Amino acid sequence: MTVKDVLSPLKGFETTALAVEAEMPVFQALPRLLDAPGRVLPVVSEEGVVMGYVTESSMLEGLGRIFGADEETSEIVVECHRIDYSASSVARAVEDSDSHLLGIVSTPTGENDRIQLTLRVGTSEPMSAVRSLERYGYEVVSWHGAASSVLTATIAAERLLSLQTLLNV
Image (tube, rainbow, N blue to C red; front, side, top):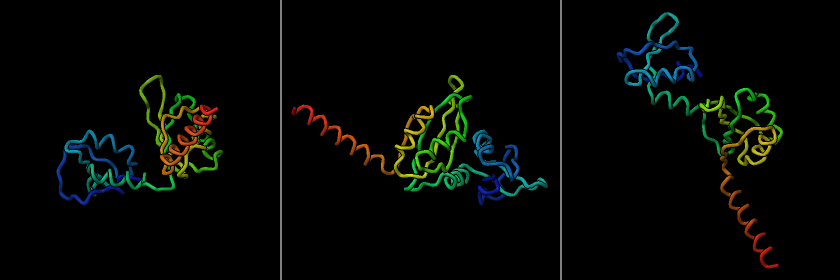
């Protein structure tokens, strides 16, 4: 997705912010938007003509389209050292669990040259993908899926029944 895909209908707004090119990816424009006065960024065509503006709300709307919610997807957050990161290895770990990797967003953690990866996985139950990622050496920080709360409650109930059985012996 490029900046021209998140233009605001705002017209004739004057800003002192440096303009961005219409073909710039939104992930590159986001930090510039956060530093822009009034959080408004002019967008120019290749000819240097102002095509429109990117505002906080138009950027948020565009990012929402990229990360659209779906009940059949889950989110898994993993951490690893930057040198150990491989998108193909992450995809292989997820796909070994019979799930599909739908997206990866990487963020530096700021400590010990580590990065955090937020994975969007095509299943409402991410536990098999979580276990697979751990087998591949990725540290799973958190996970969430539509079936997560039901599964957690089911596991807790089973463990309580097992404990009760042991105590009754």
